[in-house]
Figure (cartoon, rainbow, N blue to C red):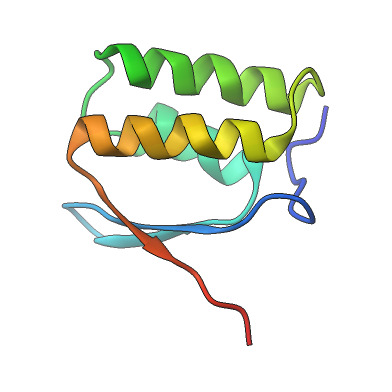
Length: 88
């Protein structure tokens, strides 16, 4: 299980309602937490696909970047703005 894999996961910024309104997802563990605890709804086809992809990425069945694509689709479905995170 690779909960804190970050070397191949390009970070994603999220602009969500609530406190704090902005979050940065850097690891699969971050993503799992947000999907389970902070996501605005647990319905929707893309949300379900993202949860499954997260489990698959954590267990090593798919690459973290494949999960990231599913996560971005779920964010779009939920109306969550995504931001590019630039490393300096």
